[in-house]
Structure formats: structure tokens, C-alpha cells
Length: 147
Image: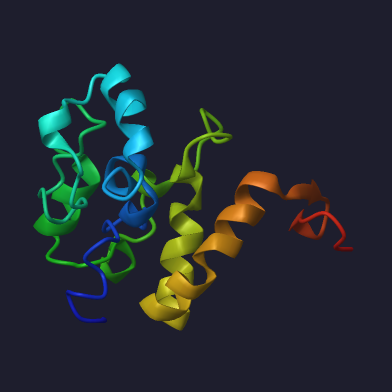
């Protein structure tokens, strides 16, 4: 696996903390009122990322079970676990249009095969395809202009 510095802003499940508004607020102060309106205290911001807060995500009411699971299995990334893939990473339709959680499995597989740096380089394209791609049977999510 890559070194700890390379994965510092990637949660064990594959969520990219650097793309979270709670992290981005450090460079985009206009996000502060939005986060506060969602119940996050100003003194908790910016969030340094999942690993730095040991899974105590500001958007959760408790410590993240995915994080705790990875720690208990002594892995940095879920794909390193003997139980991968598991139901904690199973995609679900619920809020898939606004949350990147369904990207976790794809991210895990991409990182496993290509490494963290390649994944980071492709992350914006992966995210764009997830949120704006149109499903075509037999072709997967295509972006406008692709066939």
C-alpha cells in the first residue's frame, strides 16, 4: 500500500475527504454558513479528514463504522481486508444522486489496481462520470458526447 501521507485524505472506504465541504471550507469560507446551517459547529471546521479525526466525521452522530472496521481488521484501505467486498461497501440507491458513497467500490478497485496517485489524478473525471453520466445498457455511464 502507499504511504500514510498519500492516503491521509482518503477514508479507508474510499471517500475522498479533500472533496468534502467540511474540508474545503478552509479555502472556501463561503461554505461556512452552509455547514453551520447543517448543524456543524464553526469551531470544528475545517475538518482535517477521516483518518485525522479517527472516523469521527462531522456529518455523523457517532464514530464511523467503516473506519472502525478497517482499524479492527488492521488495514489502511478496505480492499486490503480478507472480507472485501462486504456489505458496508454495498451500493444503495438512497441519496446516490447527491452523496459519493456509491463510488466507494469503484474507488477501492481503482486504487487497488492503479494506486492512490493515479486515482487522485482521475478523481474529478470519476466523480463527473458518477454524477453526470447517463446509463446506457451495455456501456455503463456515458458522458455527453460519448458513444
